[in-house]
Amino acid sequence: MSWVRNNTNSEDVFAHWWDYGYLVQTMANRTTILDGGNANAYGDYLMGRYVLTTPKPETALSFMKTFSVDYLIIDPTDLGKYGAYSKIGSDKNWDRFSAPNTMLIDNAQITETSNGTTYVFAGTNFVDEDIIYQDIFLPGPTYDKYGNAAYKSYILGILIEINNKNKSYGIKQPIAVFVYNNQQYRLPIRYVYFNNQLIDFKTGIESTFRIMPQVSQSNNGQISINNFGAGIYLSPKVSKGLFAQIYLMNDPLNQYTTIQKAYSADDYVVKYLKQQWPEIDDFVYFNGLRAPLKIWKVDYPQNIRTNLEFLATEGEYGALDILKFSD
Image (tube, rainbow, N blue to C red; front, side):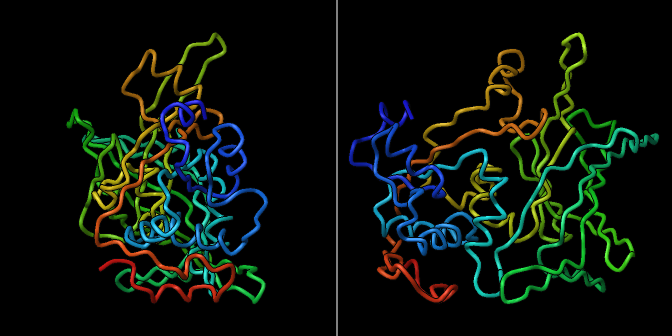
């Protein structure tokens, strides 16, 4: 907030999930469009749907332009809150709901061959929507009228083989291990994000595995870093959303060129590690996920429309999807 006070204008407006409204208002003395008072609870739905989880950049820009937003903030705890704002931002069929979590490498399952090493990242999570790949069908959850889910398929982990003969990390296409009706299925994943690069294998389910280092510390205080130690499985709908695209992956597809990062504050553990390893990822697993707080300056292309419907205090959930957000 010191950076906000000293580097932004007093009349600037900030957008973020509602949790941080009072922080920005009181410690930075800036206007926010949401805060903990939730005077407009429908606004929480709009922010969750049309900014944080939207797969359409023009939708997020239209929403923020309507409120004259100058800056967007995403906090490191927002990954853990994804289940909350994706559910709040869903339509009546809970179409945005997901809850990505961190997977850790299982050292006991590492296998080596003459050509490479296969790593297993373990971490169970529910399949958040139907997956159809070739002749395989894995059903997503069903919901009752209160939003209570009946989960049917789960992901158990990720397999990645690294070619040892390639000194620049010869990552082969990862395989996701799913289970449905007590039967396992192994499906290829199309994307891997590693070392600030999005690797596209062209085929596979439209999901992304975001790899990050895992840091461990011995009893005598010695630190070791495994650059392949942890990762986050991003389902197709999560990986396409704004949160994953600009926060977790730094806009790898150049879809948000008018939302430019203005400030980033590392977790204190990552800040310490960078003193010795400057090239370490901003996202690190050490006794939990260590992630940065990021602030972006928002500019607007001329073709982006404002929509007065965003100013409403109530409405039908999902109804605004039919609006036109750009010319």
